[in-house]
Amino acid sequence: MKRYAYYVFMVVAAALCSCSGPLKKERVISVTIEPQRYFVEQIAGGKFSVHCVVPAGQSPETFDPSPRQMAEIGRSTAYFRIGYIGFEQAWMENIQENNPDMPLFDLSKGMTLIHGSEEMEETEHRMAGGSHTHLIDPHIWSSFEGARTIARNTLDALITIDEENSSYYRTNYNKLCAVIDSTEAEADKLLKPLLSRTFIIYHPSLTYFAKEYGLTQLCIEFDGKEPSPSQMKELIDTARKHNVRVVFVQQEFDSKNAALVAEETGCRLVVINPLAYDWPGEMLHIAKSLAEGL
Image (cartoon, rainbow, N blue to C red; front, side):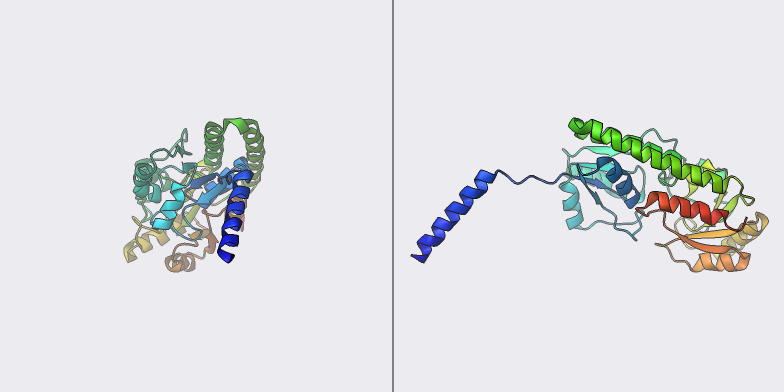
């Protein structure tokens, strides 16, 4: 009797489920880094969930995803890459091969990219004991031109995969552009009066930002490695020559050498997070740190 009652219950439950229709599958967009998640969420609103592959606090230059994370990517409606960052250089081909039907969009499309030789010339990396291992500098989000490029490409990508909601995405895009404009206007006020146009940073993540404002970026990191004593001496001498006042260190890197440079030069040591989700807040934090003590 109990077995019969259980059978009846299961039949009724199945019938009720079939009447309610299939469960709606959540629509997900995967991105590589947290600043991308900010931009995509501002435009996508509630139409898509956004999955960030590289967790906060991890370096997207060296991050290796777990099988579970790769499976999460495979469940995505689309992948929005930032362009040329280490994780994408190492894994994007594999992601495409495993998910041939998943659309892939490059948010750096149309950006004026800084290549290795140009970057070294403009930011004095080699002179200062630092160089970048990328043929193309990937840190486009750390600039206002880059932010606008990412926003526009995000809008185009969302309309491509969900044209039905194009007017919704355009409205959100315009709101985001207003935020980018107001953030840039505030940064302009802070940075235009700068007396010292040179700053030190551990990893060269502000190349595009420096180019926008006519700043010189000196880097502690040398080809992704800790600098030698002679490279450290050259960097300190260069910093004194250019009257550097601030040393930036990113939270995912060891601050030991940055602290030593700051101590030897009398600079302020400031922790920044270019990989932060709060893109407007972090851009203004960097600008204010450069402007302090003019």
